[in-house]
Amino acid sequence: MKKILFWVCFFVFISGLWAQQFTIPAGAVLLESTEFKNNGVAYIIERRYKLPSGEILYAYYDVDGNNSVTIQKIEQTPILALGTNINISGMPGYREFNFGDDRRRLVQFMKIMKLGQKDNYSGRVKTPSLSDDIFDTFGSWRSEFKLLLDLYDETWVLEHRQWSGTRLASTDTTAIIRVNRYND
Image (cartoon, rainbow, N blue to C red; front, side, top):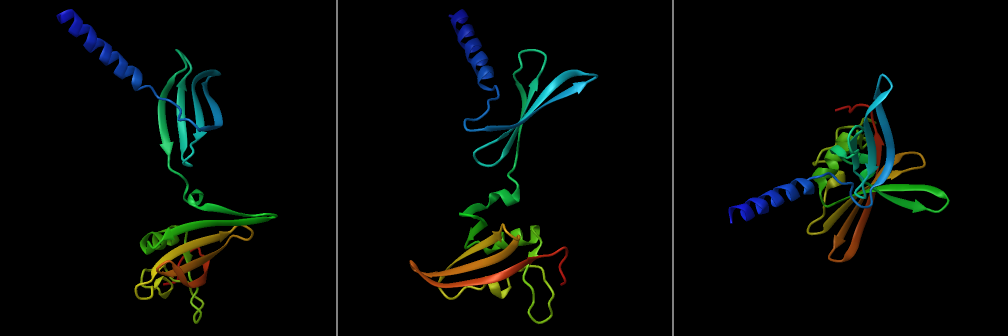
């Protein structure tokens, strides 16, 4: 009985180790494969894969031994790759960043990308804030904020849609500019 229990535990342990081996997910596209060498002798291979989610997977293979994956790491999707491409035939198109009704994420994104609204009176650009009038909502209407990047000349526009139930009640657009620093 003890021998059977030993072999069952041993088999479970070995199968657990086997299940921990790294694998490349289905749908991953190989972007690049690089051999790292020391004095002309390869010691590790790095391969970059693009996952269907847009993330980049780095897999490191041991050149000695059985060429199995030894280390994996995933790099988060670059912030500009998060948008949705809107293709217009014969033209560069747009990249759309849909924030829904989450003004906080929109403001943080604008700060990270150094985007702001130009003041019509002074010509200065201030740091985006939740208190800006371009983020105001009307009564019980539901808001949807979309930031659009024109891929032709890399200009930005904020589209603010307001819905009354299922009906589109209002659409406002605001020119957004990119700055090196804000003029608060």
